[in-house]
Length: 168
Image 1 (cartoon, rainbow, N blue to C red):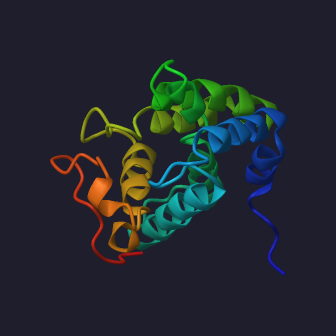
Image 2: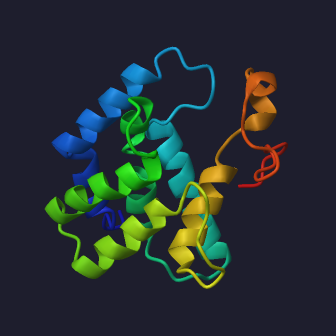
């Protein structure tokens, strides 16, 4: 069996603050009819991002891809409570979790920057590849073609076309 190269990702999913945030998100999304922000979504984003990383030869480590994906919506509950936007809250929360799970300052900056721009997209075309990858994979992870709430969804069509087919 291959050595697990997602050791720090597994530390993240066991982190108390991370688990508490996911529980808070689940409470607020209990009756949500639209896409939820849960482990299934985080892993869909991670797997799409990793496939794209390999297909496009981006050279981002699997661990960086997975960790950014696991943390990108961790601050969702703060936005639901009327606080800051979830991309900024998630980046702030992620920094502490990444610090506790052994990431260097450089790695933390790369991941938190990608998280901070996953909602609206990278500021510039020359932003780091992880920023583009997380943003695009998050959008691609939605199975709009099979969604029962598609007609009621307020996903901004001008910016993101709803996913009508399987790509990854």
